[in-house]
Image (cartoon, rainbow, N blue to C red; front, side, top):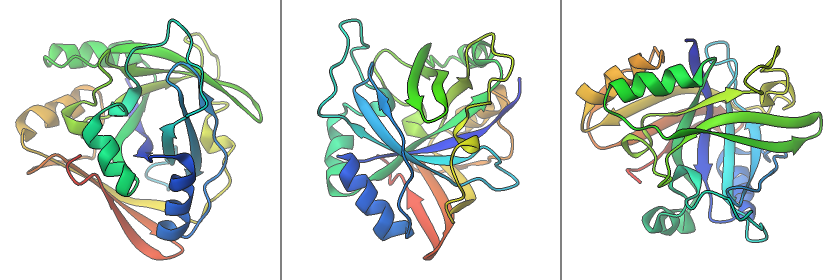
Length: 235
């Protein structure tokens, strides 16, 4: 199982708020994204890849007030987006809440986490339209929508259909232009490093060392405004 950082997730109260925040905080306007009908959300994206993290991009995501979710839609939205505390926090300012790790075998990743006593949720099939075709992927989402370890253990994503010959052909890294922003570093702290560190290793995500402390993600980005730190601030 090969695993690497795929993208960072920033939740905004509205997509308009997220775009303004990005322009003010990072000095760029995010690129286009799309809608996710089954979760009633929409997003904007921009590339933050570097040689160490060649797939990396940042997703600004918000609840879509105009979305009409299908009758069989999951009850809870992904990334804890229905959580009252998270929504109160992002009403003040968009917040880094999670990161997503790309794997070539999402079912093996789910099994590895279950062996650690962690329930990652099902591998939910999702899709959205892009300028180059329909993007398809599977993402681990719990029925309650909760993030793992308060967002410090990534959701898992496998791009393309399960039998796709070129699963990364339509990956956002291939459609997003250079943004002028790159991921300098990502650090993780958690009050249970003795549980989180083995979980990261179980899914094959190397290079991240968990430090003891409050549940926290800190991403340092190199931007047109210099180095900018994004923090989950325990939400």
